[in-house]
Image (tube, rainbow, N blue to C red; front, side, top):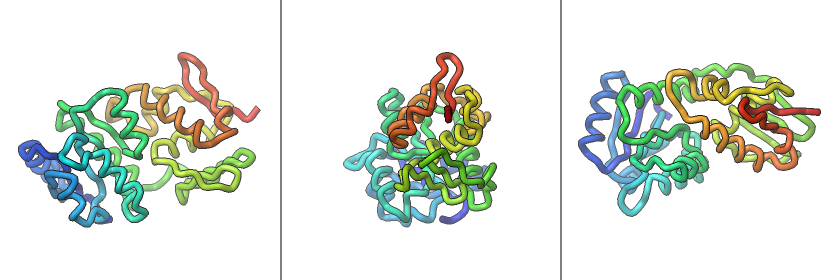
Length: 229
């Protein structure tokens, strides 16, 4: 993946050019594709991040993201959805596919730049993880250094946000983390993300880790924790 190169995929040419101008002013190299079909003609593995609209032509942004996440050489390329579709259903679909963030139009360029910086920090080759110690409880294991989660010996596919939430909960078992704390540490305190995003991710994590899902406890009005007893 080429460092600090962004692909903007949107069928609104004026918007694409505005994003290109402002992102280049921030020091990023920027390419533009006016459709998902055009994006698929490019070497997507070159990009450090893709800004992707949902509603486009014959192939939607959600479909393009699904194609990328199904390709081993592309699944680690970060995706931020920028779209006028701002319903909860759209947000959940985007997160389920594995998007790293979701910005609803109309948005400010300041917000877009902040989200990009936050994702770049987490995904850049030189990023230093908070801790690489392997975390485990019985047959549930999280290996931060290789970004792998296994349940009773079977590897479980887990997008970055889900993985980071589970790692955080396992790092301090029997402690409740507030939604605000999880948002601040995983999405960073530069941007505003609705609390509902945490709830959606927790639901998916519980399902994926099977019998260990019941270990993730909800304290109404407070937050979540992974309890070992």
